[in-house]
Amino acid sequence: MFTKLLHLAKMTWMFTWRLLVIDAILFKGKTDDKALLIGFILAAVLIFVFNKTLLTWPLVRLIRRKRVIIPANGWGSDAAVPPETPKKEPAPTPVPTTKFRDPKLEGEMLAGAIENGRITGYEPSTLENQPVPDAIMMTGVPGSGLHGAAGLEEGNIELGVQGEENFARALSVAGLINRFATVWSVPVLDPFEYKLNRYLTDIDCVLATDDTVFLVDLKNYKSGAVRYHHKGNILYCEDTMTGQQVGEMKSMSRNMAMATSALRTHFPEVNFTPVVVFMPTDKGEGFIDNVVWPDNIPAMNLSQFLFKLKTEPNFDWKTTVHAGVVARIGNLLNLKRD
Image 1 (cartoon, helix red, strand yellow):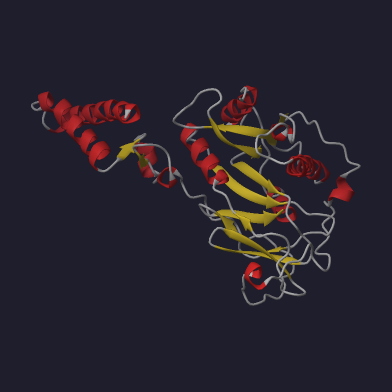
Image 2: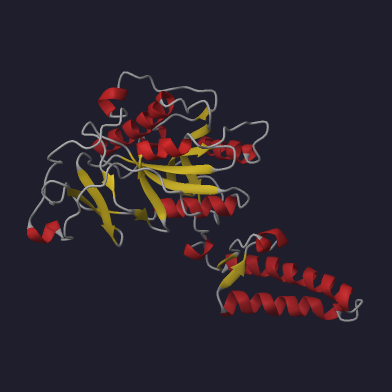
């Protein structure tokens, strides 16, 4: 209720001064005594009847057709601006598809792929002798946000740390680590409870080019000669030789959608582009068959994402328009958590 009353006061003022401006221009100030009442009524109807609120309403956001209406009781899917449709990227040679079925119902499950997939040069055994880079435009330490994370098993923590470290190594091997600014293991604050220890989730890596800020969620899933596809929010990993499910099916969480929505609320001027990146295992990489996470966040292999980054303009602290925002995101690493 407090949040709604706060938005009511803000929106009443927002409507009132616009009505005063319109009145001064069109009616030469003859009806300005009614502006406050009209503004209050409009704000109250929007919040308490339609349960919506206008967070911001500058003219430039209307021209750019940004969404500015959000639920009055908090953030949600209405607050998120869908990312731009990603450019079509080269993918590994398509593999034959098989008829969709639920392997759990049929009792079919493989521990791993029968054969190796496409070998990229970024497999863990290839990168293990590479040091984790410590570049001048790196903020934070890859994998540091996972140490001591609540609710995660030790094995999953180790895989998560390895994934972030290998992503940093891959950027270094590909000659990209010094071209872009990166912030690692970033805690994301709740946009409506902007204070210490009130965070929603973590982003594995925030990677900024000259005109785009990528929000990267890294996945250490099964790989090899497999095909990843999804039905609803359930992700399937199918062995391409047998058509059987490889490992457990996975639920695609909304964590990345929540993180993207929160950062867009905090920093509406920034072009955030979320992406889910599958890291290869020593069996290579599989085939990702048009997989998208909730809120239309694309999933791609590491090799595809590195190829995409090579076409991006370099980040420059002196000229990049969102350099200050990247610095502020880096400051989130100083937050202490429970």
